[in-house]
Amino acid sequence: MKALVRTLLCIALLAGSSFAQQAAAAAPKKPGVIEAADLKTVVPTNYFFDSLVASVQSRNSGAARFGNGKMLVAAFVDNSGYSADISRKYQGLLIVETKVSIGDAELEPGEYGFGFVAEGKFLVLNVAADEVLHTTYQTDETLKRPVPLKIVADGDGYRLYAGKKYVTIKAK
Image (cartoon, rainbow, N blue to C red; front, side, top):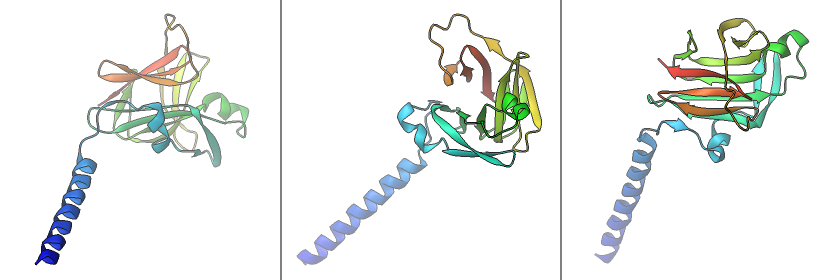
């Protein structure tokens, strides 16, 4: 009898533990900027773009989760193996899991390259290096200590900064 009670108790504990794990996994993810310690779980270490693989600069990366639970991931890459024309436009990777607006343009979910170019434009390129979006970037002159890349909350969206240059990204 004691063995049966112990067996039933073990089964109940295991089932409860399994249920708790499933409930935690199914719980909605909280919107907001992803903490630096958690970036390694969402930022890739290498990125395929225009027939080459570039190393991702994990120290210059950021990610955020929208209210719908979908992610935004951005990071600079080592673009030294690319032609001058491509490396001028392709500075980093951009991954969006939901339709977004970037400035005054819309972008479908996908994996892209991006660049802040001298003409005051923010470009988004597909993996074949074809331009799929361009919009004007803003400059934040009040920023005291700009860093190479960061994502910060901005109302119901986020700002993607490269130094003092930024674009606003919102889920659609």
